[in-house]
View (cartoon, helix red, strand yellow):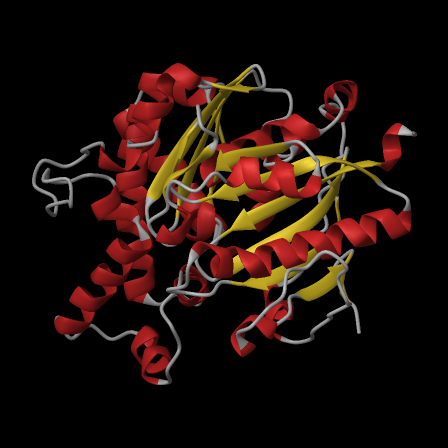
Length: 376
């Protein structure tokens, strides 16, 4: 079997659904599916759209002559590493305590690996993204909450993982908002998507003029992308929010660098990936909270793999070791399907191994793309 025909199936479970992808030993996404998340269902019904997509991917792999080396799952939350199962998945509680790896290995006869999403993302960036060539890599992501993960010499730093997992509760302002953990001024209360939205709401209550109000009144949802677009256009409120978030992120990154001593700090997630402006503000603010020497010693860069970081990183332990070593020198970026493709076309071949489905809602099929192109 040729090494370049070796692949793994990566699955990233998120609140809105799951992405299932076929990933080669160079970190490239060759084929992908999207599966819908069904809320408030028993575990069998919750998993069915995901497993159906996995089976579709395995059928595609067999038809194309690929050698599948295993399945890598990424979930938001926490894990029981000993039992290899999700421990707490706040957005999808049906997965809590379920023996996911055992199910996958029994059902498909393939090795299975399970990761927290931020841990998977840092592995993806280390091997195939912005972390190539660095020994100590700290990955910081800002979405609904702030998360972080540390990799040293290609391995997740297990001893620090429990502390890093609660990085969103590191206080950076003694007079900041009260956090759900009971403390004041935790980073999560100052730089998350929710924190940014509250900043905009306060500006609106003060009567400040902003084009954000017009867009929100037109039923657009608040998002980092919407904020970034208005900041680029020079909207004063958007720029004010970015300035505030950049200042707090500068204070937070100074603490992270002192605690974990990384060679590179990679910033990812919806908030940090929306605009280069925020990255510039973080770099500037860091000088205020740290020495100029430290700033020169640590590189601060944006995540390179974008939304595919966790998807790709989830399969890293399954890829050939010698191939992974080679790909650290030079690899092309993974193909990323545009977000807008997720809600358009459908593809539903008959599956020989799919279980019977009783609910009409479960008949919603995933969408398929191949190298960034939609299949009819």
